[in-house]
Image (cartoon, rainbow, N blue to C red):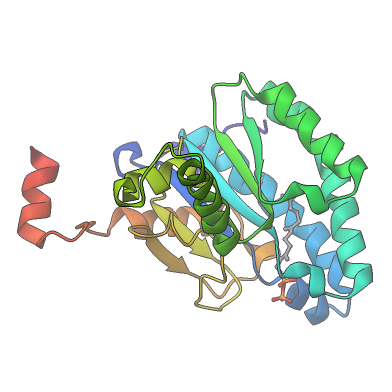
Length: 255
Ligand code: FPP
């Protein structure tokens, strides 16, 4: 990892989120603003990925989930999709040794079966190599959709009903949760979206139930450590009530 960032050392660790998720939007516009092809934005976006991964690891954030490719992104121009796929392969090849050295555990969520065998192999190898690591849990959502996530959970539960293992009235929200991606991690605390749009776009729809939302106009390649710190500071100033009154929430936090 790069040298520890002394500005990050000043952040109050007790108010940090345990799990952050990011929609990395604005790569295309960043490139178009510079009269570059859209894919140049994605390539530069990798630098911002590195910055937030390093900052999260340094701060001791437990999990970071990044939306790299949605189930809807296949509809983009063929050349852009192909370049993104190549970028995933080269980024894994280039970055994984360093991630591994830094105890980061990499995991991909989404329907990876649609990727070319070469990319699937890289993904599987990276997950295997880092599976025992005890540091930051870095999750890359690739060919992921929140509705797909709920669907695969529903199918798994329906299979248990089909074989007579379970009755419909026994289904609980906790049980559904057990089949949803990332259920083994701390609940999502902070959701960040760059690029100016204020929507969730079929990202972690189930997991977002009580997450704090943070939107910035910055385009993803411009999102640096300082921008990330600003988002974390905004989170630190929020009162999370989980349906309670403000007074009850304070009492519960002090209990
Ligand atoms: C959205 O910007 C961004 C994507 C669809 C791709 C995100 C991918 C990366 C940052 C590449 C590296 C990722 C990893 C994990 C190695 P957009 O193209 O929709 O931007 P626009 O709204 O300006 O068109």
